[in-house]
Image (cartoon, rainbow, N blue to C red; front, side, top):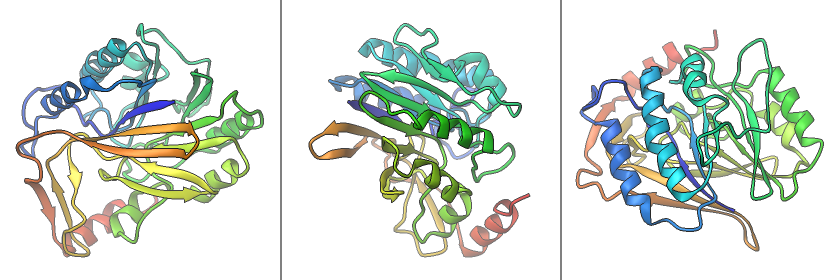
Length: 294
């Protein structure tokens, strides 16, 4: 199965450049045009931070552009929430986040929880696709509630026909980078315990705005790069540099080589231009004020 993964589109209700001078909607349009030649894609997956402002209008743009792109390929479009997203607005426009090629609700089951987390499951070409909601309102870091972990554990007690792909926004892995360690998934060990011994073939995430591959409970975890911007790890240690340049992922599961991951880059004439930077003091203060568990 071939998955075209987008992440971190950060769309806004107002068209045009954002506070960093980047037109998120225009960037997405440009990139989807670049991706129009892709063949053999079985689903389009968007791993969170769909809207930067949580507005209904922003999700409507995502549904129009990404849903329309997926419909043109004749495949489902599947979305997860991210830390910038708003569950109420997301649900009004995208429902469970699982949309068929015809735009109709595609999920075969969804979590029912007092917390309102948006988690669902569907089947694509015999593969079970499970989306989780790692959004913790008001926080940059992520977490999975006990209700979601119990629901996931119950699902994984039975294998899918061809295996399972799990998608969520916050990565359960991190490099030795302060921002990643502060703002990734806070209860990764609990997720690992649920996944251990299961039929999950890959865990697909976003959030870091760069590509990263690691393992959780022996399962490949892929951090897909962002559409709206890219984090540049050539910046001095302890600082943060964000540059222009839309990227996406092409993920293959089920082949003889196991899961394969490839990064696709848009031909943006302004790629690599700096959007903004934070020095060591700014990064340290940001982590201190936004990284504490409340």
